[in-house]
Length: 367
Image (cartoon, rainbow, N blue to C red; front, side):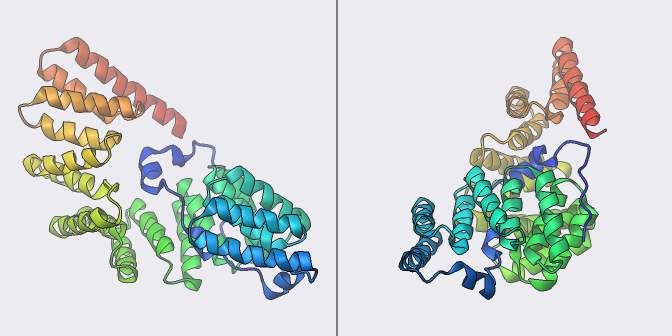
């Protein structure tokens, strides 16, 4: 079990790449354990009011499966009004709050449940998950450490601890937690995905390839699996395989998630590195079309254009990238080069100074 420690440097959730790649709500809640039979029995009273509450809980669960979270919340709250001691209803209400991204309410109900039953694994996990989604990673880590000390075999807790450590760039410990979680749930797609990301981030590209292949075997329509497989192949110098994987990710994403721009941007960046800018430009443009607010996509369009004759368009895209992400240094450096090429030394010096300032501030945060 990883020993929790609070890093002294800034949260890596603020890192634009991690934030964008992982941005949406995690699906870890889908694998949450249910109450044990003993606990469920304690939570089910025999009074008519509590029997009616149990029926309302079942209705609420069905509403959750239909993604009618406001309706589910109403059912669970009504059940608790009729039978305040119903712990099952309180757990399900907390889950519904989390699914609806009402994290403050989820935190409150989980805390109330812990006041009744301090050793409830469900309540501890749900509270940790709420902290995690609120980006309160130190608090999430401490709750998870306590939970794992109580039950070191809890795969959900190992998984969430692994993700928490991943966001803190504690990759070796994150790997251990995710591997432990996979022993009990070897087919868990989300755990496979993040373990692959951990390997990739540590430059362990061959193990990452194996993991992303496993993910694709579990889900042949995993566009993120193919996209990350392409990144691994690129890192290994297998650019033809990388291109094929990126194209497959693009094909799947068009149907599964049209807002997913990464395989286009990754293909564009790889082709630019290979000095195949004419081929790269359409992919960069498509990425920027899908997500016009992506600083990276705008930068890639500008970078591809900078290799040709349309330097003014390049400057416009690079300037847009710099505006979208003020902490992104690369657009400023390339702008400096272009302004110098165009004989505009004052503007060039300004952009180089901004590049140095952003890098200096970034290094200060890391230290």
